Image 1 (cartoon, rainbow, N blue to C red):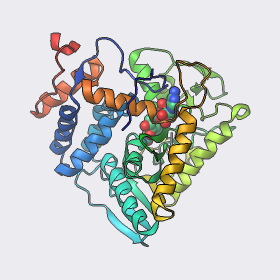
Image 2: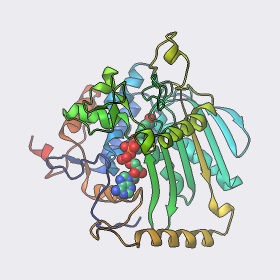
Image 3: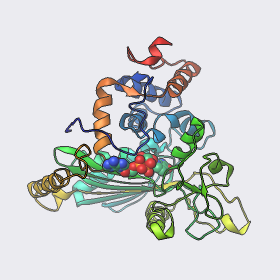
Image 4: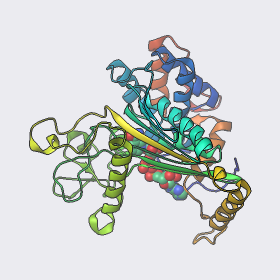
Length: 391
Ligand SMILES: NC(=O)c1ccc[n+]([C@@H]2O[C@H](COP(=O)([O-])OP(=O)(O)OC[C@H]3O[C@@H](n4cnc5c(N)ncnc54)[C@H](O)[C@@H]3O)[C@@H](O)[C@H]2O)c1
């Protein structure tokens, strides 16, 4: 992976450079996380894969979907029986290039990586591999999984719905009918870090709003709106049910139908195709059932294309190099902010954090220490010189 010293300008929720931040050795953090998953019944190999996918968030600066979700989301899923750590996914249909699986509530952090690896294997055979999964659970950062195929020279699209969780309204609608429906697209970029577009189809994911709520900070106008479409800056409004996330693009005049359309793309490809739980349901607005369902029976679909199975590898690689040379070499408006692409800054942070330790907020570090103590596991240690050493 190419490393550079370019200034980080990403808008992700990085706490990487915040002062008073404990840092933990990457290997130790992954091993600790895997130990927690093993403690809750995941077989060792799955626990390691899941741990790598979860730590990816903190490693790359996507902190809204990193270890902060360990206690808030994944441990709760185990405790409530909404995730089966030892579930064996079942093959419902296998057509060679296309496979349909029932995950039987296996941990999405693991099953999504498995699905990408399976789709990649099929792509090596057929040029393209599609794996579509029903009854899945939360997969964390979609890009952590999609990147696995790009690291092997392939192109990957991964889309996941949020089961029956309904928090966003169609433009012009009164009833929330969809989730934040993440989409990731990853492709090799030659000697440079892979292109990894990894995003919610809403303007921000819920994790960003809840992070602001925990920090006691208002959110910018443009993230939430009230039932009449007026801006809401109180992050607690989301969980109170009187603040609705906005689509990528904002309002209809600024492109909301593009975000909404992408959200529907994710719903159709990710959940309708495999037969998973759907957000849009009449019960959400007819008064006949619970309007805001849970994110159970999530659906996701992975599509992997192997370019080298379709055209000479050297041609594809030469053209890739030329394309990314043209992008990153192009003149910038501000020379201190060179032109980059999605995945660049995440890779840069991963390289830096792999060397100097993964930064965690003091509160998250304490939370992990408590998780270890409650389970009789060895707690992660803060690296020498980083703040938790002194406390
Ligand atoms: N599992 C779920 O249900 C779920 C739901 C929603 C979101 N998520 C995850 O939440 C995470 C965060 O999503 P988000 O929408 O807040 O992402 P984001 O807005 O922080 O970033 C979106 C994309 O823009 C790129 N980007 C941002 N700033 C850039 C810059 N300056 N230069 C180049 N590229 C730049 C990033 O690389 C990323 O690919 C993702 O990992 C996503 O998969 C998961």
